[in-house]
Length: 305
Image (cartoon, rainbow, N blue to C red; front, top):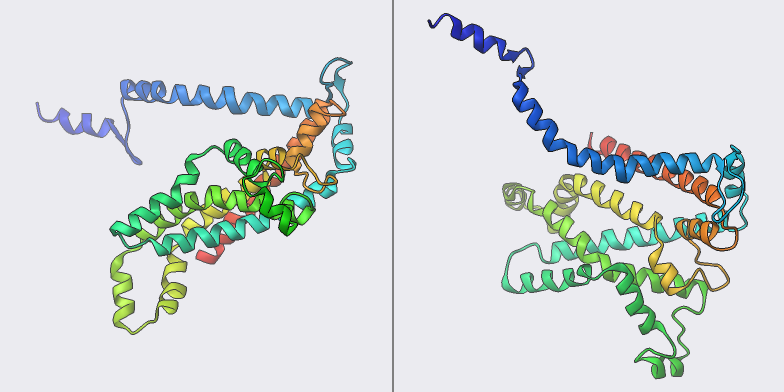
């Protein structure tokens, strides 16, 4: 009677390990189906539709539809605001990414030790992240307004215009983003810092290492996975900036703060009303994001190796 037991056990396993039964496999498919439907309906289908639109004539309201590749991509690249929007988006991304990563890491180091005051600081740093970006943009729009702001008399007497010049509009928007997202990146950095074993720091202190030596030789190298994640998130979010500039500047002054995503909106719903060209520019942005994120991850992996 016991002779069959090894054969049944061996039949239930493979060289790679345990082989699930049909019932377990069916349960796995049932659990995965809602996520698969969600991904197909909200990602794959829209992506395929955008690709189709980018290769066809697709006016917003009416007109002939049909294949016209690669005219949409040519029109998108030849648009009068394309180069300026790309340059401005890259400039904004570099400034916002550097500030967010530095402030997020600095705040995480500040509140790394658990105490009553540090817990209060963590909460206060994280509070702005609970506010939606559109709501935060409207709040800062009022604060920056020379008419509705509670600081309007002071702004008028000092001649301050937060949104009156290209550089002022850029850095005023960057300040909003830093205020809104620095606490979020602080939490990510804090998780990475707390995952580093305390024994490593104790060994460094016993060897006489200074705080700067410990930070440079231990903290930063062991924090590379967290830095990779935060950098990818920050760069991706900055390259896709839309709400803050749409609400605060509307692309002004003098069309100096138009981002790439805002240009897509303008082509699709303002002026040209051409969904085909807007879809082509969206495909270009998607390809650029995939390439940039791949290069970032590859750079972090090579440094880690």
